[in-house]
Image (cartoon, rainbow, N blue to C red; front, side):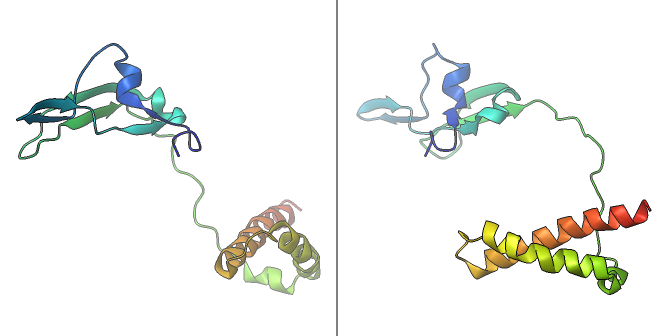
Length: 138
């Protein structure tokens, strides 16, 4: 699973030569590193500090992870609602009707009917948005 999702043990990456443990037992005297914090490649550069620290009332230690602050890029697009006047536009109706077979073909590997319905709604929304922008620019 680690390879499939490109996940890596961030503590080991940041502390390649350090030996530390997340679990211990005093009798017999055993220490192991049983706990991991797996993180994707995309987040690796955002990690500023990672450490193993003692925990209260458990024989496992905690893994402390600190990420750098991510700057806000501002607000994204607002909620979009379908302008129902499009439903009277003949070109819009033709666009939806003609595109539906293409969307169904693209979603032929989606076996869950709920996911297929979401796929169709996604295509209707994105194409309606584009169509609305085109009409507005005329």
